[in-house]
Image 1 (tube, helix red, strand yellow):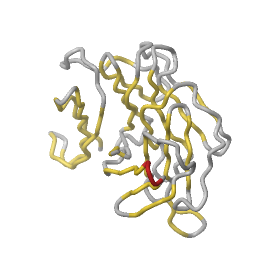
Image 2 (tube, rainbow, N blue to C red):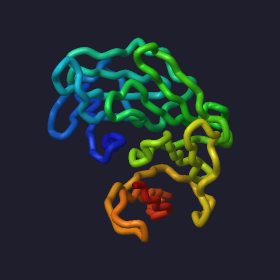
Image 3 (cartoon, rainbow, N blue to C red):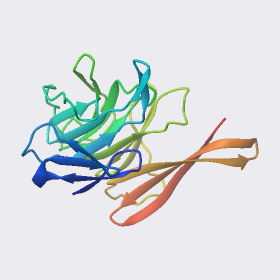
Length: 215
């Protein structure tokens, strides 16, 4: 099984041997015999004077993680309110929070999970009650949190404490299964700036939907 880890790397989960293969390195998965369908490998962060990184895996409503390369796993997390469709890191400097999207025709669209206190927070206000297939954060916007969600009925955006708003102008009313942001530097009328371009995958078609410049 092949999956994207949320930061562009392709990972392979070998269920038969209960082994997680990431970038050519093998890790034991937390519960042998369990099929994990979502994988996230965090960026490196500083912990106790050394570099560390998290690996999150999910199946259905179950979310597990390790911070020591699979030597031990935390798998007693309270179940998510819905089936998890995507996992993304919210704070790349120290990933205490992850953001997950969920499938289902209900109010459980996007949640934050804060692992130090094992808490789930529903941040779905403004989303339609349809399946949400992915959620990502614009890392170039450092002034306030900027999230994008791909849903059964298009793309939605959430900035700061505001509710989600429809963000599919110029895009057909289609299911959006994957979103990616390309981060580049480019010249604008205001000089050289950071540019974040949002790409949406819709049943084999990839569309460059939105480009925003950040100082």
